[in-house]
Length: 191
Length: 269
Image 1 (tube, one colour):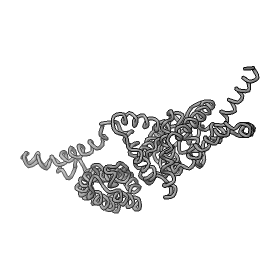
Image 2: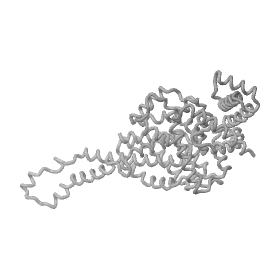
Image 3: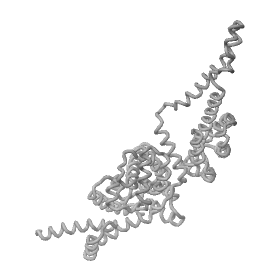
Image 4: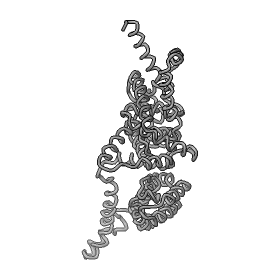
């Protein structure tokens, strides 16, 4: 997992949020927004949607802070909010796609190419990203969440179980099934 | 099929499942050693492991892992704070003091001026008039109170102007909605129109508080906000990405959103 610079600072910021201190939002966002953005982007594969989800996640964090368990780590808690909001957004988009014509895959790949860190990586990543998007989209919602947290955030199985509120056994079997499914999906998407 | 072969089959299935976890990099210690040893002996499992590793490698090479949000943190913070503010305000109910302040000012001003307006119409007898103290000697509303009300109103105008200007600038700078993908143009909605409306109101926001120390101290921010609003006012609603980025850069370099936030808090006291 990317470093979130310690739970102590997070706990203090969360306690301030719980007390209604809005000044705590900016430092909390500074520590976590990139990580949450990458979770949402890996899940949704749309930069604009991912930004919206990050925004909603911090608003929700502020609103839910009074209910936050003071002994828990803020990182997994924020990741859980982000995953749940990503799933909501995914469902909304899917409903809309049933009504409207979806974006062409090439448009999707182009929008993701903008998100890459360097021109080389962008070029390399475009085709792979397109195939991955197809394979990830083929996964059930929770399996996709497990894969994203494991392979885009390098979270341990225990951390994933904590973040998603699942048992360790369910996380393990979800991961195994998801990878097997993606293998088939990626093979099918190859030109 | 013998019991021994059935047991061997079940054991093999368990090991094959571990191949997936091995590929995912979540096996450690003895479990990992056992899975690796099994791969040496089982060609099918080795092929499956290699295929799953390719899936994991594809994700490890995905640029999404290092993707940066397309907008600076300051814009995201501003958007979140705006949403939090909205979520805290009861829907459809204006802040009471927005209504109460102008109303109170009007009532107090009417009360203060009443003796002067009504006085000349009522020609009281000279003796009786002598007993009525002049309005200046015992005013219902002191000059200080009126000045305070005027000052509060001026600050309120400035706060509303700055808050709305901040919203317009965030809308433009944080937009990612395409309106013309081929031309790389982005939709900024009503932001140019709202900028023009705000610029028309600027005189009210700045002029009314000209004598107030707090509003005068906001002059630098107000001037920078005006410049930014003029830029936005000249944009079409479907604007080139480069123009959006220029506005974003300027707002960012001048730290305009942060300064607006600090100044509105100061003005609100």
